[in-house]
Length: 577
Image 1 (cartoon, rainbow, N blue to C red):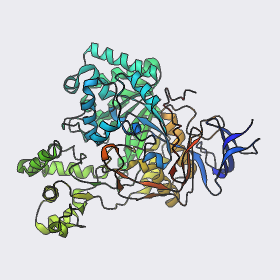
Image 2: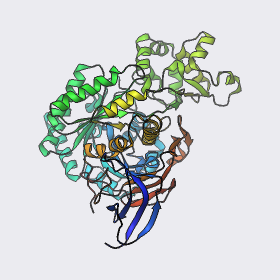
Image 3: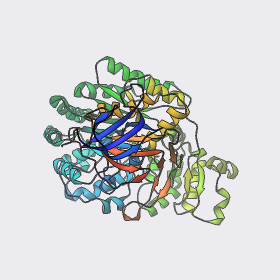
Image 4: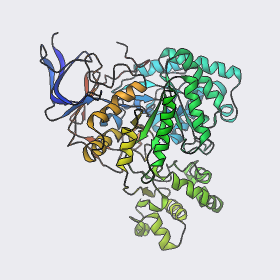
């Protein structure tokens, strides 16, 4: 058999298949796992001492928005720091292809709001050398990558390309347009796309477009979606990612069921989320998934499991978009935002009980309740120091003001630089464990890696899950955790020979110290000025990872990047050798 490239020596193997952990050496050659256990013939060029460490498959992150960032950051950090070795791009229907040359700028502007990716970074960091999906995939193939990736057809981009933006937002497609969309999706699948994606949140979408209007997919009609599902069914390939609130809306659930029936291909639904006190919220969704599964329909639930806070200013905030008045106040140039925040009519509407209730109901995913937000920074203005460290609710009480007025007044007084933090919250580990342990069809995720860069750090979900649910709470076994973060998502998304440590599989591997595993900082991310154009983002570093290996090459060793870029675009979920 000859010499090997890497020997991972003396570690505890958790291979992703749920078999009990065991101690064994892992030998890697030519990008693949050559042998697990026993004495191998020959020597390895590199030996990684894994004594006392866990050796497991690299994590598969199915919900990311690294579409722009992968062009300047091959490792898709922060996910790449936290053991993620494969990502899926083009989630929620958003992306950069197909795209006519004269629409590139508008395409990037969309992403500045709906996924909060800085425009300057996209403008400087992306070299647009494509129009069509096949051209885009070829471009992605050529780009240096430190992780593997597969790509959805972003449905918003497809509809805009075929219909034009105005038409795509205001009417159903014609039969001719539907035929053209089917043709382009088939052409994309032929070139290696993994399926298509949509966000469907209605006219009061929580993730609106650059101008505050809903995204194209938010209001698209059922028939336009089912039209694309036909293509997957006819070809018997690909899968669908859908972001849709089905918590209480019977019609929405019925539509997702119809979509799975029409496509007869896997649908990845998000999100399955747990509240702190009401177990019925996640159980209702789990029961619905089980009902569809009982009918033979292939649906999976992506679970929101991350413990993370938000730190944000109203200059960059977009997660109150479900409220029309907030959407209006946080849209436009800085000057326009300041002017609108002073408008008494907009303020009155934002304070209307139905809208304050809506924000409270969605608090878990949008930074917490406004009254509990803590004032963290006030633009170094000494006259405002008395507010630092207080909650918005406390200031409102002391000054006899509405909490929303407090927030807006502080934002205006600081030229939109006032920073608000989610206080450290409690989460319900029993409910998170229930989502994972009681259903065969769920996995942690919804990291949103690469999105909401100035106030969210979901790419650390893998490390958090192992620290919290496995090590500290001991509510999910190590074997189950690795199955749910590697093998199951790889299977759901059509990755071939990924997500498990077995002989012949691709060598995507993490080696880590479970006791030493951690996130720095744990709650709100640090600020790093490391994006193109001098832009900044929030980051969380990982600690405890001895080695991260992609296709048989180390990308990180002892937390330091090696500079290797062995990642591949996986067309049809496969690596072209």
